[in-house]
Image (cartoon, rainbow, N blue to C red; front, side, top):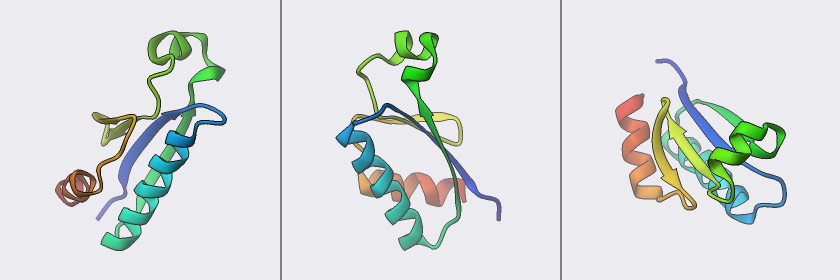
Length: 84
């Protein structure tokens, strides 16, 4: 079984981003899954900053858009199980 790839577009001092990352890590641990978590700070790239602006966190699961602003635990469990 390979790691489930999760990308979180984030920015510094973003409490919603911190909550999303904590939820992702906790749910993956609860499910006994290994994830490859990639955190991308949109403020480090002018193109990303323009594309995402304040719309963070923006979460991709296996490169597919999954969540914006808030990670729903139930939906994340389903997505992780489908991707595992």
